[in-house]
Each structure stands twice: as C-alpha cells, then as structure tokens.
Image 1 (cartoon, rainbow, N blue to C red):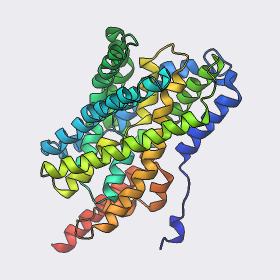
Image 2 (image 1 turned 90 degrees about the horizontal axis):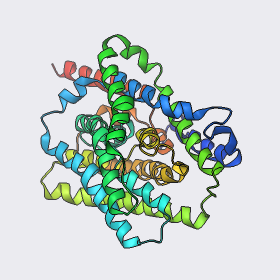
Image 3 (image 1 turned 90 degrees about the vertical axis):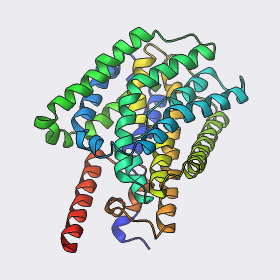
Length: 367
C-alpha cells in the first residue's frame, strides 16, 4: 500500500507539453514564426542555452565511473542507434505509403534520437538494474547523438525519396548550437555547476516553447489537425515499438550473457527516447519546415507512453526480483514519480545524493 505522500501527482513537464499543444491548436498565431511572442528566436538561440545547461549538469565522474563495462555500453548504444532505427525502418517499409509523409519522417527522427537521461536512470534503479551503467550510457548517448542523429536522418531521407540534408550546414549548426555549448558548460562546471542545478527547470521551459513554436507554425501554415484515428494509430505504433524494443533487448541481453542488472539497464536505456533533446535538435535539423509540429508528434506521444508503460514495467520487475540487490536510488524514486512520468534534474540530483549518503552509511556501519 502506498503511503499518503506517495499519491499520484501528474508531472509538470507532461502537463506543459499538453498545454502547449492545446494552446497551439487554439491560438496558432501566438507562437508561430514572426508572431507576437517571437518564439522563432527562442527556437533559434534557446537551443544553445539548453545544451549549455546540459554541459553544466553533466558530471564527468559519472562517465569515468562506468567506463570499464564495455559490453553493457556497446549493447545499449547499439540498441539505441542501430536496432531501434532498423526496427522503425523495417516497420515503415511494411506500412508502405499509408502514413502521411510528416509522420513517416517523425518516426524516422524518433528512431535516431538519444535515450532520455534522467528518466532512464531512475526507471533502471526502480527495476533493480545497473544504475552506474545507466548513468554512463545516458550521458554517452547524448554526446553521440550530436553526430549520429543527423547522419541517420540524412540516410533515412535519402532512402525514403525525400531528398537529403545538407550535412555540412547541419553539422555546422549542431557544432555551434549543441557541441560548443556542451563543451563550454563542461569548462564552466567547476564554477557554475552548483548554480546550474537551481536553473535546471530552464531547459524544460525552452523545450516547451520550442514545441509551442513548432506546432503553432504548423497550424498557422494550414496544417490541419490530424484526424483522431490517425493519431490513435500513431500512438498504437509507439506502444508496439516500445514493447518490441523491450522484448528484443531482454532476449538479446540474455543471449549475450549479460547480468540481470546490466540487462535491465540496457533494456530501459536502449528503448527510451528523449523529447528534451528531440525538440531542440528537430528545430535545427528541419529549419524552416512548416510542419515541424507534425514531425515531432510521434516523438511526443512516444515520450508519454514510454514513461507510463516503462514506469509500470520497472516497478513490476523491481518487486518481482527480491533476490536482486536494490540500489538506494530505487527507494528515493517514489511510485508517484514514475506514474507522473518524468523526473526533473533537481529532484534527480537530490535522489542521487540520498543514495550516496545511504551507501556511505551502510558501508560505515559494516566497518
């Protein structure tokens, strides 16, 4: 039975996403390019602020701590950047031309995104997985996506007959708006890292404004709202895709002889995708696209569904395996956090600190 303070509370970021979609649909002129809010400027320059914050919050010791478990890292990154794209690509070949081009591109873009950072780590902890490995792979995935995401999108567009990206220009924009702010954040981390934890909500606000701008511009340009049956089909495809990835990664991890903890870390990190990285990167990759909102729709729906289904699955795995060592971070993540489907960077940092204190006290008590 849940304690009174663990009652379900919806996550503010998910509520914000829904609010932005509704606002864009009701009042597209407000957030469109050149509108009264000038959100196109936020989309253009706010992306750099998002990745600057990511650089300030990314602890290098997390990367060093998990560096040696190369089998888990190879398994997880291959799942995220090879298996996931190939699965989506194959599914679209089977579907044929029954899906509008915007949604086809949206699924291809979803396939090329990095894993969600904070949520994949917390879900792994609740499932009794390798938390250190999840932290390492979530951080590594975000770094690899700077190069791999545009390369996959370029390849997808070329094979799908939709043209190609100007890779030189795209990589130049990514270097300026993603790689450079990440590197600058790492350089400034010793002085501004603690301050950045108090501004961790700023990146979410910018992502919400990017989503509002994308959908407002799409609706203002005459893109009609997709019919409900089509959106339900997209959501259904997202559910099938997530469950297929979970099932395949579980089987592959067992076949490769990974430990249970490593399998669960690779399974959740490999199957999850980040809309927090997807929205800013989409604004860079598809600059000037009037239908960017429709392109982002599969990723937004996937973000919601992966958290709802993944959170429930993680809790089931965590309670069904009492013999597996349970990381203290799993107890710091309440069921309401999982069902609310999202973990802010500041709350996640507090849970990591609590876990470390618990580990220290346990070790000291044994001595």
